[in-house]
Image (cartoon, rainbow, N blue to C red; front, side, top):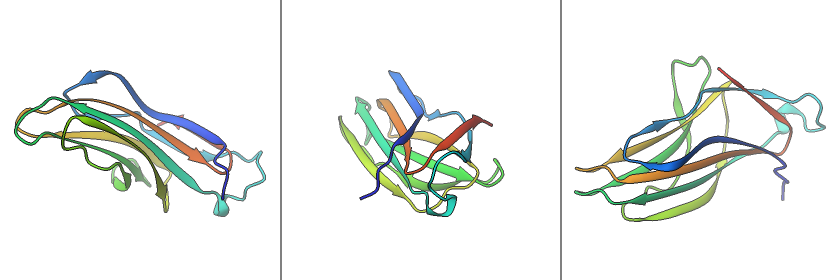
Length: 132
């Protein structure tokens, strides 16, 4: 089992919000000082999402996106969608990452729910994140 010793918080909303959130866009760089070759480095993402309230089928989605250029974004991992009051905490595997990453929350329903989100990227090797 790999050890994911490097971690970085990509999004942390401490106050509940009924609006979609888009986290900071980061440029992901390897850390040349570790012993894990870049092609062998593994990543996982931790999602901790809460939802409360809302009406007419409220939902909360949280997704990790990547981009090679900062213009075209694709989803590489997503938390289990919340469809009722509660929370989800889970690790998700990531198959590949481009040079840029960001996290978004997307709310749905007739009246969007209040939500919070904490999203942490973990790696088996070193990594550096720079604000894009």
